[in-house]
Length: 157
Image: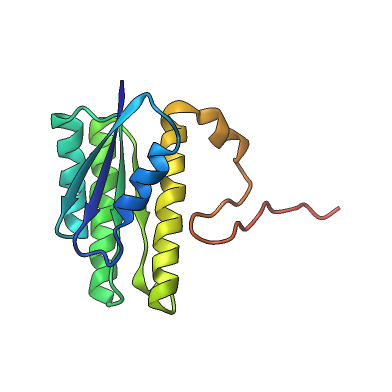
């Protein structure tokens, strides 16, 4: 049975893992979800690594919400590098899903963006494990998580 790890933080202003887990559960059976919550975004790489080592997960979904300050963006970058390093070290994918507070103009918009992005990244994570051909069909289509799709670039004739 496959295992999907979901790592999230208490720093986030939206419970993104709740939406991600619901989206995964809606995909059916044949896997188990393991959730680990940590204080902040820079703790996500260790949470993912421990789920790979201790829980035997096949893939991790790392959810975080950096604040608006420049320092928060720096922390997000450091966390992202840590997630990349962990993924390469374990030779297993980590799907990074960050929602920056500055991406939304209001609390309502931020909640909607976080929910949608978490759900769409969860669907991508599931597809990576169970239906990679679905992702291949979307190649070059300008798909976006949380916002409207950009669409493919069309060649001028």
